[in-house]
Image (cartoon, rainbow, N blue to C red; front, side, top):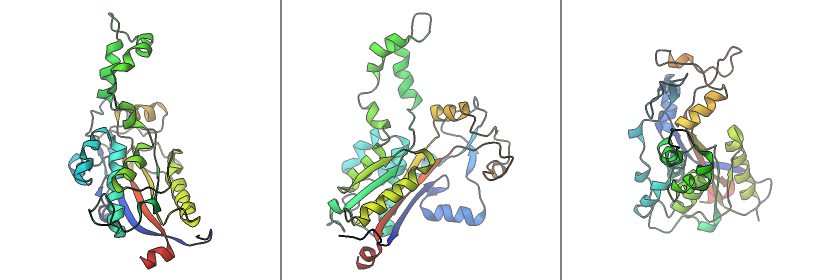
Length: 280
């Protein structure tokens, strides 16, 4: 049984940001003073007051390349947030030098029931094309939306696995399935504090002896038409065009800060007790 005072250490780091996949891409950008903010490419942002974001290039990351062949079919029901979580977890596990069911056919470094997972998630927005394809079926003859029809029949036209793609716990769910983590698992959805709370929960799980290691952190992508609209309605994002200097837009600690810029990314860590990490 572990002690509540046992020291917990970070033995693996997995990061995905607008600069690329891995801690090196982020570190290099920080050392060079580069910004990752540019005009949004994933959708046409011209109708929004803010047209820029911290966006990871489409060709910089492909989730199918970081999961075993047996799991590639499951990537079809992964939203962007889940894809990034799976990618960051893979980097963290590699950085920690662990072998899991998702990295090799060899015997795992740790028994699966001794590996936990706690990941903070945001409010995941549905992809517009998937939602609108169902919404259009509840149009009246004059083109207006019929809420009653939507409630009784329209929503039945959503794809069968639609809900399983956008539940916040799908991030931890897919990570644990890929790597066969059978220890304590949980999802925290408390906005910007989600990652810190997940980290604290993983620490407590290890300290009470329920796991030897935990994957922990937080991942989110707000680069989605509905997510961007939600933030614009809340007045949280800055009024910015592609002609503005990206490096001057985000000033979170300035008294005259005009708002924030949306982005995507996250970080997953491998936590272990100091004694366990040294022994391993």
